[in-house]
Image (cartoon, rainbow, N blue to C red; front, side, top):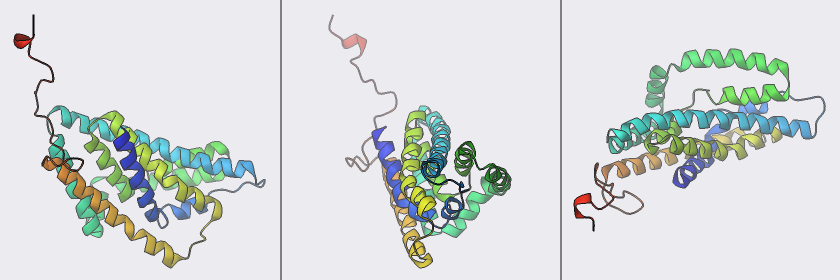
Length: 240
């Protein structure tokens, strides 16, 4: 699980550059209390905790799906398919975003999120900020889809949850900073930083493909044990 947690953290840290343009405006627009101070910081912290909670839940579900494939002996195939989708998203992002939007019903999700967001914004409580974070985790986002795909490739519920926990934690520094300091960086600088995210997504996709190819390269494409291989000495050959 350490590997999945570290992988998710790297995706979140590098991918959070993309968050400047997507989730940054939401973080800046979070309700502000009349009394600043500790309550102000606590509210923004709870908002980010809410996001991470949703990401962990999504990761667990994706990991459960991947676990079913792993039991069927298809984990390598899943890694190759997921890696290929990530690589295509990095190379032709506009085309793949349309594909994601078509198959994941993101228009309906966006409508629901907007309505719920509006209601929570009016409440202006610590609980509502936590709820806003929970809802924000469901916002249509290619980067989140990629992290969930990686969770499915992890092949277990725990691994999928750990990867998304790392992913959420990796996005916290940027979004927490934005929610407090506001949009301090110029728009040109934010766009320049966001261009690095697809490169990292493509590199991760290539790594998943190599893992799935089972080439026997240590750390990069380790040889997977054959399905049904016994890890213990057969009973017929065990000493009496």
